[in-house]
Image 1 (cartoon, rainbow, N blue to C red):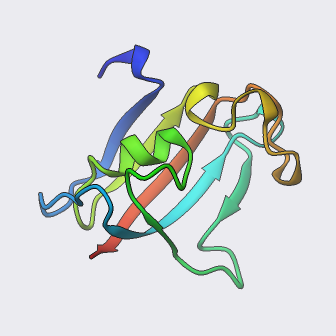
Image 2 (cartoon, rainbow, N blue to C red; image 1 turned 180 degrees about the vertical axis):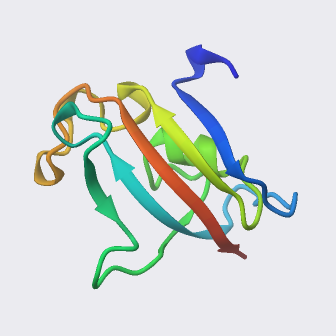
Image 3 (tube, helix red, strand yellow; image 1 turned 120 degrees about the horizontal axis):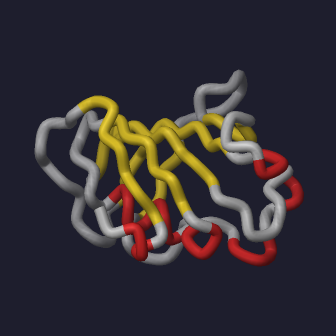
Amino acid sequence: INANMGFTKTVLRAGNGVLPKRGQQVTVHCTGYGKNSDLAEKFWSTKDPGQEPFTFQVGMGQVIKGWDEGVIGMSLGEVAKIHCSPDYAYGSGGFPAWGIMPNSELAFEIEVLSFR
C-alpha cells in the first residue's frame, strides 16, 4: 500500500476476484466514520433505517477520490475498510451537513453488492 496515494484499503472479506471497470454502475453498502473528526463516530450508513444501497459510476469523479480509486480495486462481494486522507475525502470544505469537519480523515466500510 502506498501511503502517498491518499487512501489505504484493508480487506475484511475477500470477494470473487472479478473487478468493476471504469464507468460501470457499482452498488455498495457503506458506513462512513469520522464525524466531528472522530474515526469511531459514524456519520452515515446505507444500513440505517430508511436508507438504500448506494449506486455510482466508478472512476468517473461522481464520488470522493478515496471511493473512486478504492472501489475500482474491490471485487464482487468484497468487504473492505477504506481510510481516506482529507484530500481523498471532502478536503478543506468538509461536509458540514454530515458533521464532517474541514480537512478530516475519514474511514468507510464498503461492501460491493453488484456492478454492471
